[in-house]
Figure 1: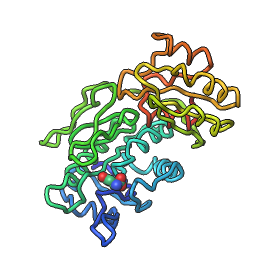
Figure 2: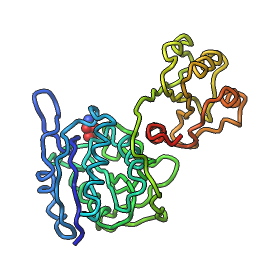
Figure 3: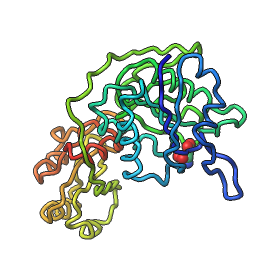
Length: 301
Ligand code: ASP
């Protein structure tokens, strides 16, 4: 039998109705009690790390999760993280970088309806996540609605429906069938040699809109890192050129990402993109916003 560690962090999966609305209440052990089938193929120890709506999570909480995995890396065959779905993509992306060198499965899951609610997706997702963790393939992934998503490709695209996640820019890595079989459609990658030891969360994401007030950029002067979510293949509008130049001259590192969910930044295609290149803005390629933030926080770019 595979030996798994479940790290409980809160989220809808652990929620109960209160007079103030849904709030995390169930412990990790209570979550496991809802899914007795788990015991057919694994043993699960539980650690209640935090009990948060993932809206309240910060990089520090995500670092705690990474450290909890590392602390017990030798004792378990795999790790499952029960997490709120709203910011699960941010956690998956950050853990993807922080645990890049770990040769164990790390599987995030959550649910759109609380464990125990009628027609909840929680029992299936927790069971599937344990199946993937017990399967043994190394790497950080998310398992939701039967899909196995690479940690750096997770996007939550729907705020209410059960099937709320997609894999941006590449197909899911695999699936978990209704028969419980784990099927991988994409070959496994080897763990990295090293992983970042620290993170710096001082990065600000600014979404360009067609009429963004140019004077806004002055307020950002000297801020360490600013990521501009630009249009399509990426570029700086002419009417913002001198402001973005001045921002870079103030010492701020400026990164470019795209508002498109897939396809990425290609600054060389258009004159507006070359304008960004010429002023020294840094392309983040085809990373998702969540992965781009994680990579920059980890100092990889
Ligand atoms: N607000 C919840 C959370 O992210 C939503 C969920 O888990 O589905 O914690």
